[in-house]
Length: 369
Ligand code: ADP
Ligand code: GN1
Ligand code: MG
Image (tube, rainbow, N blue to C red; front, side, top):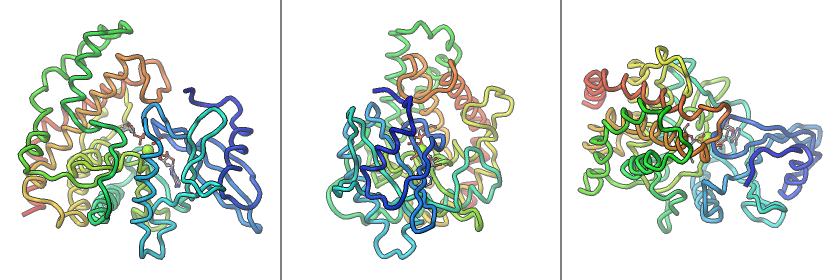
């Protein structure tokens, strides 16, 4: 499967025609900074008004069962929209194909879907203001709460073992042993950093196996750029990117908010002296998250909030490192050592959280007592 079409305009017009969109196609262009799917914004003119939509080619190398994934998303979006008059802005809305399906297959077998564009709101790659952290965390916490009473069968696991840190650690070890691209030497320091932290990987898995932390429906990809913040009020209006909404642990969701929002630098910052877990932002994240999800959490979940941030940052570092060693087949990259840079940044953040572990736990204790 190839990503990045050579003739985007022509393709997009043809793809857009498959969906139940009205009016006149005006323009379309790549949009956003996701690492997985190919996202485009398309503009239509209808009765003199310009209306935008999101068209996405779903990465079917990453998501092996797109029909199951879209079934999850249909169930989740329908549930979130129920009884909410403002749902068009507050949750993703699938635009069906002209045949009424949730996705379209193009002439080469690619999977496409269309969403209503959430206007007057945006996503951020790096936090601009601590208030954004509060709103993002509150919105993700609210999302978890709203899904507590999703009826019907268990959601599909769209990526098996997604946040199974033991599985991710073992995958790294296999990639190092195989070293199929001769890159292990370049990542010697990072590999050693990872291997020295094996003790972390089973902690949440063991708590889950002992029944101390429950499986719930979680988002599983709660980075800052997966929540839209209102341009006027700054409120977290809409959580997006539902591809990994499936059964999981709320702690991973909280942890990934910290990884992405409390980092003082970008996810791929190469000047590691700029990478730091900002304690005041962490405190605001805890506060925002507890404001919505507080009543949902049990004692153990509360006690592991700070640890979860360190664990998920470590896990995502492992994934970037593994992908680097395996020849960059998973995450989109924009330069040759991009995945290694991302890994280094995640590990620098882990280190920063290690040195601030006591302070992070003290913040949680204060805000939960
Ligand atoms: P990926 O899985 O590749 O991360 P996303 O679904 O997160 O893809 O979309 C990528 C970016 O596109 C988001 O970060 C966001 O900026 C933008 N985006 C996605 N869906 C919408 C939407 N419904 N309205 C407005 N912007 C959106
Ligand atoms: C990917 O799709 P996107 O860019 O929101 C990835 C996450 C990683 C993240 C790291 C399905 O998220 O798991 O944490 O990159 N999504 C998938 O930035 O693997
Ligand atoms: Mg995304």
